[in-house]
Length: 458
Image (cartoon, rainbow, N blue to C red; front, side, top):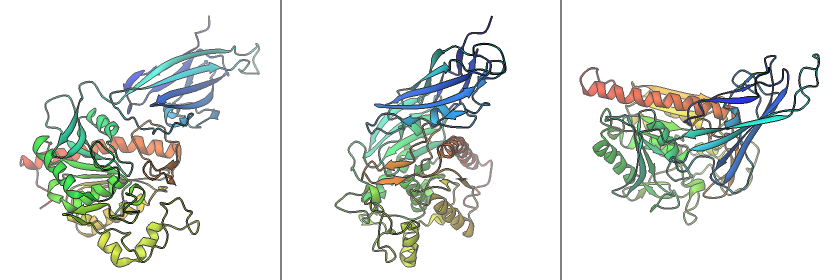
């Protein structure tokens, strides 16, 4: 008697960041089996589909067997998640907004009728379908979520179970604004106290990034150090894109208040407000202020720039790059460069070599190179992914939307990278960043206890 046709997912319920093992059992030898994964993300339906060839034993293991057709072509069980495409057009984003709501995916396995090994007798496979449900959680059991409204700060705090002290990380978004609760919640599942900090497009704050005061982040750093009891005494800071620029800027501006910096797809200069600008200020208005005055930035009357990409106009030539043109005004470039060498602590930069939104690989190398030239003695780590672009996110979310529309300006742009490259960068960097945060906080705690010399400042 043949085994029943079934699909198995292990674990069926776990964190979003955890890989699944997906197998099909009981198929006809040599049959084609199509798997379709459907996920409702907010109001949007996302789906991926791939067809596999069953082995002589009627089995398929998605981590060992590559599809013969479909939305992706590598042996990777998580391909049914990262290769999903938007099938509706209501405009929502892919990242979960509320980490308290699990991501639920329906996987349907269909045996294609009449398929099977043609050199064996028989009528081939019969048409049959089975399905199962996969739940991906962001909020782990025991993690506490608390909305923070303190001294003008707007954010959400995620605290791991237990008494601590915990490594503590301030998490900041990029030019889309908002509060990155998804990433912070997942960090907390791995023993990191994560403060997802909004600084625009969040309740009670400006809709635009223009003229964001650095004093706001100074208060956030003081709040984290005094109220959150971070392991090692100080928080780390982390942000993506404009938040990556901000991460390096905060480390350079407040070096004694920051334990370590994790900059995702960062800039190495202070830039103007660009695509998240207040229309009254414009793309070349200031992004950051300090004591009421604009922080010098690369678009402030730059003599080398006579065009800009934030109005949906095409570049003057195929290879035009405003970030290269801007460096021709050498005096302004020097004045707007983030002086990261002022920071003695550990620095991790995450970038994509195919970043089409801005040159994050170049920026990371500029920042880490400046540290090295100035005798920086703490850890410097650069995760530079060859086939990744600007959209390096948390693991196992769809990574197929390379062409994007900016959520503030509505301007079209490309993140770059490939879906597979972006997916692998997201998974690998998430693991590496967690280890870096734990390593940095533990080393500070050891130095504070007198168990090890202070290599950051000696």
